[in-house]
Image 1 (cartoon, rainbow, N blue to C red):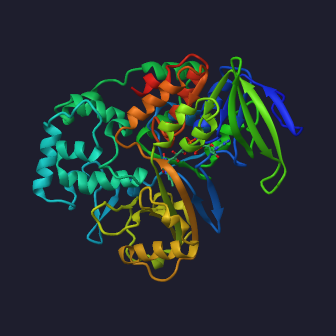
Image 2: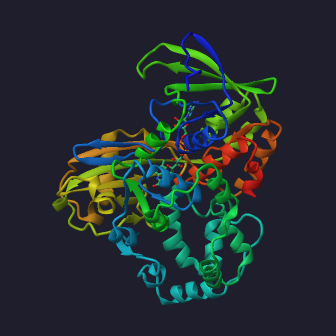
Image 3: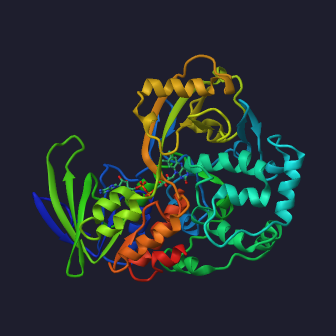
Length: 501
Ligand SMILES: Cc1cc2nc3c(=O)[nH]c(=O)nc-3n(C[C@H](O)[C@H](O)[C@H](O)COP(=O)(O)OP(=O)(O)OC[C@H]3O[C@@H](n4cnc5c(N)ncnc54)[C@H](O)[C@@H]3O)c2cc1C
């Protein structure tokens, strides 16, 4: 199919059936789905590569993941994507010894919370706390129907020790947020529903395991658009932490290669207006990343999916729907720094086998959030005789850390882990990634903000907002959101407001 959207002159114009803004995992999945539903799809991406936050580089034998590190294949849409991609890409799974062994920092030492029984066998808290956890699992008070914070819900059900030492560090590890502020219902919708209904979480888990998973509408829609490929090995990957031999970036690169029309890279959407029943997206496009000359252009379509972060989406929608800005900009975002440190194996005298360790809020180690043992999880992430660590530093929404130099951040990360992991000598490889206001925090009131946003854009038929500020932040959630956005955009899926409720 000819590329009808290339800006060949100073100001070019094109008509397509659907435009997708952003070629991260959400936008690419949306575009791939749309290519099977409509004829001409145009994807605009401001960077010069696909993947958004998903980015991998190789340096001196080390494999560096600059965004997500591994994916839990929990959504049916992500598993279906894997079925197709695995024909071309080699999937790798986390070393089982590393996957099951996780640690929490307590009084400066690593304490294990390993495997499924970890919360009941760990030394993080005593027998009384374990009895409280067990009692809560068997029988505990349901929560209110309205939004509750995660810490409150977990403490009510299972006791404060479990919430403080197991759940709080886990949530900090996932979104760097404070579980005392995050909404259970927005962050874990299924757990929120169960919390309001179930008296015995244990019996509910047993019943759910016995019930065959219902086919569900999503599966039917997936089957219709992407017929199953019956990959037996993939059925077992449901609970695995996965990546690819060449790193996670292989997946968006593969997805982009499946589109009929190439993604328009280095193309920055600047505003959206509406003319008759079509959206008119204006963009600037640089022919190369260092080129000062930018061509402008417009692309028109009756359907539009926006997958950009909340602040960018608010700016893009300003001319079209200024009221949408308020709920979008009121969503808080966490900033963080990831410091990659490569060592010779002998330099880490106390590095255990495991996935990594997390730091609970009550442990005085700020700004250390945790450390992933990258090469223990995927051995090919470091050359023979070496180890790779990813040290996470952050202070919630506070951005000051990001202003420090690379040398300062490397020194901070090194000092923070030196005693814990028995580090001797300087790292042989270092790299710093900064994330400014990047991770959306689904804080209390989030569902109301999303409902308000949906209401404001409801009159704009054919427009779907699908950024990671809604419907989950994990890559698996983003792929599911991209698939659902494409169906909605093509007029065959549920509106996002009802998906969320
Ligand atoms: C440090 C870190 C670690 C993480 N670890 C994990 C993990 O281990 N596992 C996991 O499942 N998830 C993880 N996540 C979360 C996950 O990576 C993200 O939620 C997910 O990749 C977001 O995908 P997206 O497509 O929604 O957004 P993005 O990846 O942000 O994509 C949006 C795209 O829009 C483009 N864009 C922005 N503005 C414009 C514009 N004006 N015009 C055109 N294009 C534009 C951007 O360049 C970008 O490519 C992590 C996130 C971070 C930051």
